[in-house]
Structures are given as structure tokens and as C-alpha cells.
Amino acid sequence: MGKYLRKKLIIYIITFILAVTINFIIPRMMPGDPIQSLLSRFSGMEGGREILQDQLTLLFNLDQPLWEQYLNFWKSVFTLDFGISIIQFPTPVIDIIKRAIVYDLAVLFPAIILSWIVGNKLGAYSGTDKKVDNASMPFFYFLASSPYFWMAGIVVFFFGVVIGWFPISGAYSSTASPAFTWNFIADFLHHWFLPFFTMFLVQLGGWAIGMRNMIMYEKSSNYSKYMETLGASKKLIRRYGFRNGVLPQVTGLALRIGRIVGGAITVQVVFNYPGLGRMMLDAVQNQDYFLMQGVFLTIVTMVLAANFIVDIVYMFIDPRVRLSFTEEV
Image 1 (cartoon, rainbow, N blue to C red):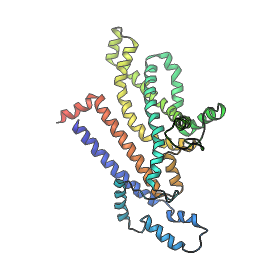
Image 2 (image 1 turned 90 degrees about the vertical axis):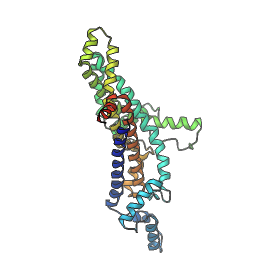
Image 3 (image 1 turned 30 degrees about the vertical axis):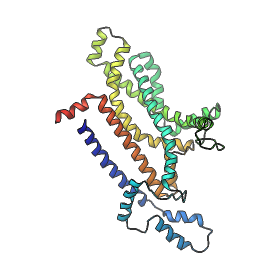
Image 4 (image 1 turned 120 degrees about the horizontal axis):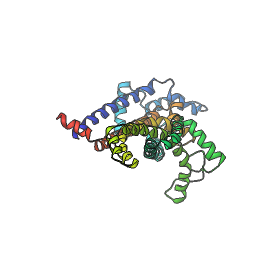
């Protein structure tokens, strides 16, 4: 187990170093000047513009050579000091990320985990019951092939416009103030449901299809046929098939965590939800390099940490992983 974890940890450290380097390079290759973008807000100001530009250049350390900026960027990674946002000047980037990450964690991880659990259970039933399979598979394929923004539009139209059960924009009402009170929590959950439900639906179909295919494969294996010959029930066969079929689904869970970020951006834009995805889009559109770097680094860290946790879980649920490293010693 120790050798397995060391190997995985080295891989993730190398990936993190590459991600940080790319995160530093890409914003500086983009067209435009963040200082000029900030100065445009003071277009009506007469005199002193050159002095202000020089001061902002010093403030953002853009007067330094690239190699020195790169070293300072690594320092900011460990001190969590990503500078000051251009579009929300003079708010520090880390403060913006702290506010936005709460909404991401509230939507992304419940949607991922719950869709994984429900999708695998439904897929297992579909793989062992032909009637259920014929009725459910078209629906699963429909969900899995639906783009996030398209599903978000459908959910908004039906639940927000036609029925009018849920609000279609924001994380909470404009009249509410964030606080740990029952009124605010109820208002937050009222706004939270549609973004969560959208991401839950799209992912549900993929998990169900994957588990259904794995169960079909396990049904054709020798141990399943032997159990069926002995008169074992469908429930018992499904239980054993599920334990073997869930292993690739755990690997898929690690990969899905990385891809979910792209879907979160479109969903958050549709619902005007103030998560990291929305912050990233605003940063790109407004050439806010410092907010872009901070948000991207936060997303990369979350993805790598989640994948590492899944790798640890996989080590415990699949004895073959531990055995393979034991045999190499």
C-alpha cells in the first residue's frame, strides 16, 4: 500500500507542477493588457494617468522579468496570495475564491456523488431485468447525450417558468443576507436545487449506462452462469455482479470529477450562479489574469485531490491493486 501511494503521489506532484506552469504561461500569452483594462475605468480622470499606470504595474509586479514573476507565482501558490482582482479591484483574489468555492462544493460534489450512487443502482437493475432495461435505456441515453447548457435550459423552462416552483437565477434572493439562519438556508436551497438537479440528471445517464454494460458482462461470466444453474435469485447474482462491475465505475468517478468542471461553467452561466466556473468565465472575458490564475489553480487542486482520494478508495475496494504491488517487492 505504501508503494502504491508513493507512486501515485509522485504522479500527482508532477501533474501539479505542470499545471502551475501552464497556469502561469497561458494568461501571459493572451492578447490584451490587464493594466489598460483597469485604467479604462478611470477614463474620465484627467492628469496623473501615467503615474497611476506605473503604480498599478508595480502593484501587480508586471515590471519584473518573466522568470522572477514565475518564482513569485510559485511563492503565491504556497502562501495563497494570488494578488488583486482586476474586475473587482481592489478585492484580493483569495477572498473572491473563498466566496465562490462554497457554491461549487454545494453543487458539484452532491451532484457527482448522488448521481454515481443512483446511476449505478439503476444500471444494475437494468442489466438484470430485460423489461426494466427496455424501458429505461432510451431515457438513460437521452440524459447522457444532453449537453449541460441544454439540460439547464429545459430545467429552467419547466420548473422555473411553467411550474414556477424554483427561482431561475442567483444563489439566494436579492433581499437575503448570507447568515446561518433557517430562513437563509431555506432560501439558499431553493435557489440551489435547479443547478444541482441539472448536473445530477446529465451525469445520471452515463453512470447507469456504464453499470448496465458491466452487469451484462458479468452475467455472461462463468460464476454468474454457475450461480444461475444452482438456482440463485436475480438479486443475489446482481449483488455479486455489482461488486465486480463497480470497480471500473470508481475509476470513471475520478475522471468525471475533472470533466464536471466544464459542465459547471455552462450551468453556472445559465443560472447566474456565483461559483468558480462563473468566476473563471468573467476573468477570461475581462482579461483578469490574476483571478484567472487563482481560479484555475483552485480547480486543478480540487480535481487532483479528489482523484487522489478516489485512488485511495480504489486501493481498499480492489485487493488486486495491493497484491500487484506486494508481488513486485
